[in-house]
Length: 590
Image (spheres, helix red, strand yellow):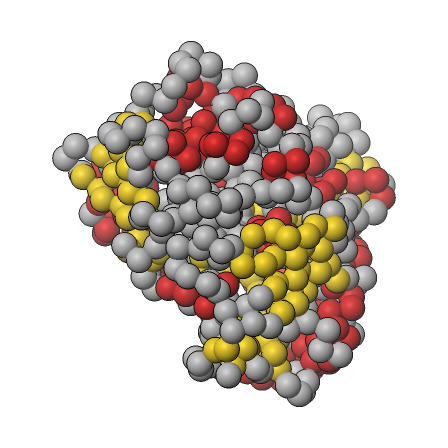
């Protein structure tokens, strides 16, 4: 799945820091109107003839510096994906249903009988130093992902459908046997050999093969364990997209100028500048026209909705925020998640009670101008019949929460409940910092849990900064019992990349035979029968809701305020790459 992200190469997961931010009391009728207004916004700026030249300033709304890893194979945050987007480009274009087309930098041919996928880079697709993108560059992406020394978070066992990748990852082979370069390293064609062809492989975001390339000629002398920290990745990256990096103020801003070797020709704009701005200042920045492109913080909608000189475009993204329970650890040697049956949070009744204690629907209505909404399942509605419309999710029900805890033996000892073995129960919640009003939202949930006698406290007694948050989650910090996070999803809905036994991004670390079975069935040969695949998606959603290792919380309208003199900025799948506009199309109206 994509990384918020993300953003990253289509087909891989992305982490996103979607934050639920609060404002004062809101009228529910107004909230309904706001949601209706957002639903009527266009998905793209009006198409007009663009002139050459001009600078576009883009607001990167975060209360923390971005990490600045300019290599998609190693990048994991939405912020890095955003600041890299003018240079980053996927190998493939798609139609509006995310099916891969021949319109991008590369073409893809799938042969079900031979169990191969052939990818050919178009002639003239060049890195920003003028070198042609080659077959070796595509192969090198797999070497970066698969080499254990890079510790790539995007590596998952789902990629091991490619023959030889598992052996390479485990250090048993020096090359990946399933990659064939028929015209040699300097050719433009790569043939991938798989154990089997999967149902989602014709679509972007399927996670079975990588949708990008890495500049081998530029990075080959950097040791794999030094790659992420190298100047070639952090300060002077190469891309084959429309822009190249010109200036970097670490963690604060990135300036992009046209890539003179861009395969589609000269982009319209002469400069794109991404600049960090606090979410708390976003509305003032929009009203003061400090940026030509800025995402609206939904809680600040009323402050910005009447701003002159901007147009609003919107979509409901493929994303959701969730509550996850830590029940195990990632075993790097085995390359898989290992669940601890004795984990504090490995009690279904406890997890369900925690979920029933959350007043998510009330919070989203009250604090986000009606622009966020509770979601009942881990598969968004945008995925059509794969979405289980009968899934109820967890509604606010303190009576049910108390009954579950009583029946499971979590008896009260004074104010707080104890564990069934009689020992004290303290639950540590990791929650991310965001806008200044993030605190009241999280405190609200703490109060709900306290009402049913659960002693839930924040890790370290406060909200955690974004980079530190993901460091603790990814490395299974023992202080964390549960955490609130978010996913930006890929366009192929299989849950394999996020919730499988072999997926590093399965941050709760839950592993069950039934989950393995359902995920395997979703991606099996039988799943070429859509009716069968739909049924298995529905079963998986029901199973995940019942087990409650991951509790879906909410999604939100994503609204952008765009200078009304801009054209070519679009959120449509056909006019998008990795969740970002095709920057070569963006320009000022003539």
